[in-house]
Length: 166
Image (tube, rainbow, N blue to C red; front, side, top):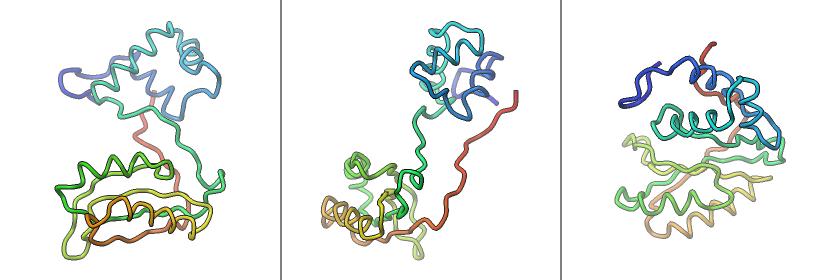
């Protein structure tokens, strides 16, 4: 595996760090310190290496991945929107900032079958709650949204990224 741009391959310590974190950070008050102890590294080095890998694109993000079903959110719908291409750059971040949207992104259209280019995952305890929240998005988008739909989750799939072996 190579890093992005001018970083070259991961060194052995980077690989150990990626392998140690790919199933999540330790659930404790100071996860980077616990990780550092497990790897025999200073905590500052662990944090610096992770920061560098984020900045160079070797890793994309560090964040919580909640299980929405366990939290009681059983009606999860991917709202898809046909928004003027010129407006997506401005409107997408506004949609993504809504507290009931877990992720929002732009995707290419596949005309004539798929006219949607803005996607926003909405979570709710019922379909009625999701529909209400989708209505809020529709109001925010206003006339920029020419059409939309909601694709509801029917089951939870295990979400994992690329896995390295030690």
